[in-house]
Length: 407
Image (cartoon, rainbow, N blue to C red; front, side):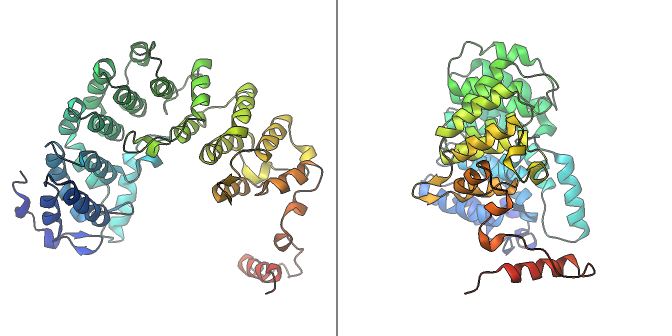
């Protein structure tokens, strides 16, 4: 194992902390059958060849050795598959809406090369694509979790979809694990645009599966990014139900880090939704937990306030019926608090769309107060007395000073 590791001039390659001379020893440590040894090596590799999403010169050279290690039985193999995927595409959850766009990354890489930055994203992606046969072989691994993660990783390698799609379809039809079948179905939804296949035929093979996760995955395939058709009512119903899905462990199901609710929100956000669907989502919103509330609120707000602040009137009386229904549901949503504390993510989401960031203020607005008066006093806008020649930046600084509460 690891033949040729010392033939690579690691000291001349860079990673997050400078020369990559430590990488070969970390890769050797990763072959240990002792879980703690692998965990320690993985921690170091996540920090140097994949540092907060950035890939470096040494990253692509580590790829074939990581693949070789993951194909050999041992602990922490799913973590290695996850590292390979992150090396290839960054954070995969950021590509759920569109599928991975290698063309955009190539363009960004060119701009970085022109600026002489020591980062290397697209070449690492290409290096992982070259290992597609090895990744496909993991779909038949004895370890269920490895198979789940392998399907997840293949979803974000569109350049080799023509090789992966037939094997993913076979996995849907043959694998006995519901987790594996669901992961393969979700992968097929993201790569369909790169290697089209008969979606109805694949879906028919699991039509009688009553498992909630498999049903969601079939619906996600129907709501795939390249779909130019109307969603069926069954698909919308399943996706709406999934908005209340409890978060899963990312180790068990890595899609969107186990947040099925958020993934359902991403899919529903691709399509215009009718009033009955939005009404049903409002009902779910009132009893949903904090994380699910953020997902639901984002979909509802995007559907009814697509221009954000520009669509929010000063008086709630001027809201459309659809908007009013959703704002009233937001007022009573379960996402305002997490435990005994205010859930900042929910509040920030609403203020980002131009609404007030607490239930009491929304209630006062709905009761007839103007939107501006519902701001906390220290944040209410004042009419500027500055001449028009003053720059926007100066105005902003002056506004902040004049509205800052005195100590």
